[in-house]
Length: 296
Ligand code: DHB
Ligand code: FE
Image 1 (tube, protein in one colour):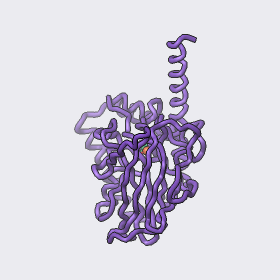
Image 2: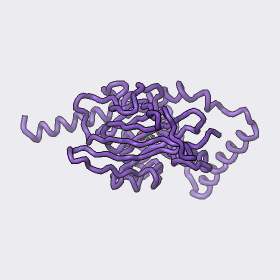
Image 3: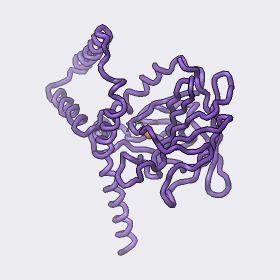
Image 4: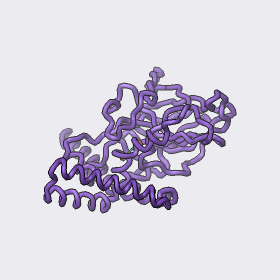
């Protein structure tokens, strides 16, 4: 095989792997949501609240139709697209990219401690428990720059939170998440790290790659039809919790990384951008702490 052919074959393999992911990740994200979150998201019993929210959402749509003189052709295109979002299982992806950041902003407006951001569709509870100094589960020779991520979890008054739990999940060096993309070990780059008696942790992992919304599903079709881009900057996901404190759901981004200034999900905040320094052996390290608010 010539070099060019080998390269094309490798590229095709990557394309196939990523393509397989669009349908699989949508279906898995939908399944995951229905399993874990339906209890907290059933339609509220508060009729007045549902009435107000539903009425205003419907009239916002009416306003758009009038303001932009929406045609029957456009109306039917919308109808068909909405149907396909459900068929592709992409509602979790759609909502978490284009809506969740505002819900998070409203929900956490009164926080004193560390900033949070969106959870996204790829959290899975129950990742393997790991000691305070540990390495996230990963494959032999997992691709990507090694990253030592360390810090301390404290309360708003500065007390160390002994035994705080740091649930971490992230994409790999190809931007793919275990349990949502095929062929990745179940708990790859996912772990529940228990901080030590001083709330300290030191986790070895790899720097993830930017994440691309699957391009062959309904969300991808919207993005290309609207001339947008489909990318989130590389990020680490965390849920940090301790008894008596409000759980912090957050993400960390990498200074200077692609799409940090232009995240499709609008989830980047300046406080969430870390700047690991090279360790001299090809890896890098960063110290970053978390401050949890008291339980409300
Ligand atoms: C989506 C994916 C992510 O990794 C994330 O952090 C947020 C949203 C998504 O595809 O919707
Ligand atoms: Fe993510």
